[in-house]
Image (cartoon, rainbow, N blue to C red; front, side):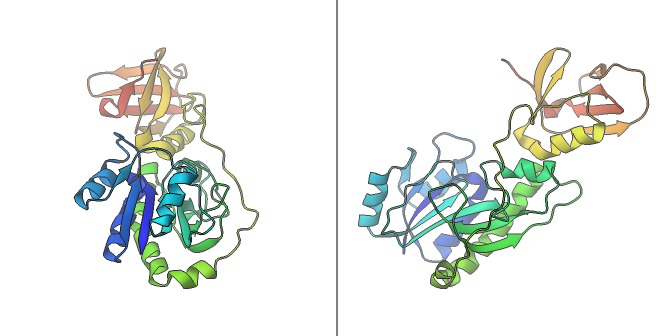
Length: 274
């Protein structure tokens, strides 16, 4: 079966599933010169698969249909994909247990909310993001110290197994899909949500840092804006001003919080130039 693939590196683990299952890639849509598309681009080049870096439009999608493509598959692809009416299969991967957690950036929300809706959902593509009928799902539990990167890894590693199950009997699953219930829509993450507020308890600051991990969390230190990827904290009573720099040496910087301090390794800190 011919497939058109749309996706970025966070779910590039799906590519090998199609290859080993005997699917033929007609084209791969991804981002050009992006750190988030390097693996996808390398896969396409290694297997002589045409690449497309533009946003898909209906004319292009109709041409793919005429070329014999029967399946559109989307995995971590941010643009809406026009689906021709006559297309046989159109499937997306979403990293929550739909219908809960619809939206473009669910992973930080899962950690910020300590949600029990983490998981992988394979569902039909539809006119509205993340609303298509559900084909298969698998729950993923959050560890006590789960962060953006560890959760991303779980999804990367567990999605191929679910996809393999789907492809083993695609017709059956596709034609016995389940309509989504009411569920919930999670708004895109704002910069305010991604910014540390030194007036918050240390525990909450650490949750925010875990929610964004290597994506980075913004903070203001000594009047300058920086991006932090990880830190440690401890609680104790003190008389320091909130946000005060307590230690600043070659290896780390320590900031006073309302109920303790945050210890930030310099290798986890990048000053942001506005």
